[in-house]
Each structure stands twice: as C-alpha cells, then as structure tokens.
Amino acid sequence: METQGIINVPEARREEFEDLRGLLMDNLSVPPGEGEAVAELVAASCLGGNHLWQDLKLPDRAALSALMKAYFRPLSDANVHDMKWKKFFYKKICEREGFMLCKSPSCGDCVDYHKCFGPEV
Image (cartoon, rainbow, N blue to C red; front, side, top):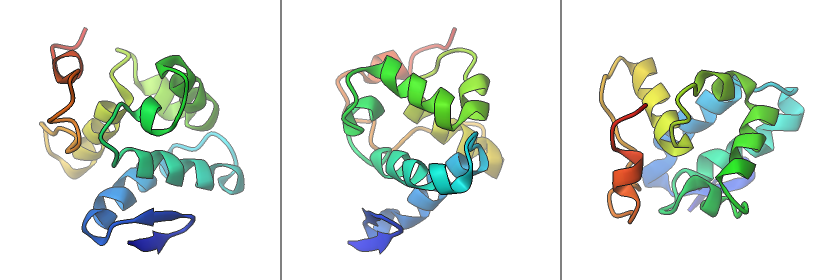
C-alpha cells in the first residue's frame, strides 16, 4: 500500500480514491484545513466492502448523514432522494465524467444490494 495524505490506499485503487477525494474536497462546507482529513477518511472508507457508515465505524446511517451535512453540505443538499451515500458519490463521479450509469465496485457482494440498487424514489 502507498500513502496518500494520512490514508493508505492500494495502488490499484488510487485513481478511484482520488476521484472520491476530489468530489468531497470540491464540496467542502468547512475550511480545507478542517475538512481534508475527513474527506480522505470518507474517500478511503468508500473502498471498503460494507455500508459506508459501517466502514467509517459510525453507529448508523443517520450519523453519516449528519457528518455529510456538517462537512459536505453541497453534497448533502444535492442528495434529495436520500440515496445511499456510496452510491450517490459514484453517481456524482460518473456524472462528472459524462457517464449515465455506474455502480460502486464494492457493492456487488453486499447482502443489501437490492436495497441500494432498486428504483429511486
């Protein structure tokens, strides 16, 4: 593993991490000095295989939503349909790149796959 800032990121997933980190940094609602470490932690946790709130060691999804509102308000405000956060981030990255359909790579084996990738409200 190689170090990116304060987080160890496997070389094979560095580009994905950088895309996630960039999205988060572009949507900070706190000064960069206060939010950069949080952006890196959230981006690295998106590479995990569980729900994002679980990989962040938060008690529940509501705690993750509160974190998003505090640090990344533009993203929080944009998630008007309460899409699962990991799915929402990858969707936003795909939109940046001009793609219409993407799925987060660590979700395929999740037991809750059908809850995240079913129809949106």
